[in-house]
Length: 231
Image 1 (cartoon, rainbow, N blue to C red):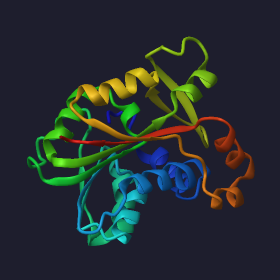
Image 2: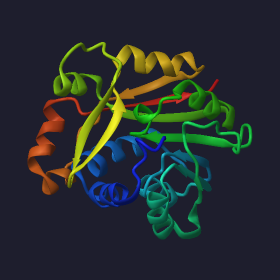
Image 3: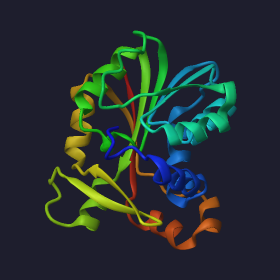
Image 4: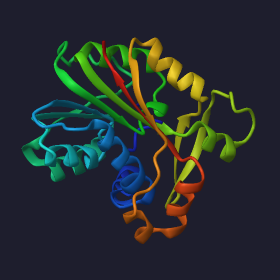
């Protein structure tokens, strides 16, 4: 992710803490993505936009054989290193740049949790992931739900523009909003095959954290998550 979208410095530190037990991150997106991952025992996993390592920790605890995390924010990677220790290889790398440092056909599973919509060079990124995945390998991608963005930002549902969204404590993030047609179309156009699509709702544990947001996820779309296969 470029300097305008990676969560650097205080923003990264704020997000790392806030997302640890937030209804949307910890109890909606994360469980959905881990469910889509299935049994990861012994698998080689690539976590793109790994941030503070929340997903990588879960994957390690589920028995992933090798985890490689990539993120454009040194502050986020610093937190991830503290959490993961030697359970993952972590790389500082801008996702707008090619993934040339990753060997061909070296991963069984690639994960992009709430990252894809931040990136400008998405076609290049998807090509790099496809190259790094073994034939039959899986790609998991989650993003903000197109309908949720349309409701929040209004205007045309089919708009494809960068928007700003507050994440608390005076911080904002920017990302691309896109229609469902564009989101799925880009993934299929990169040569992946869609295996499953989910519209995650919060787990019951989220109700204890924030009952209002828990109910919101069960009544209005929040995120979209997909599992794809590299033929």
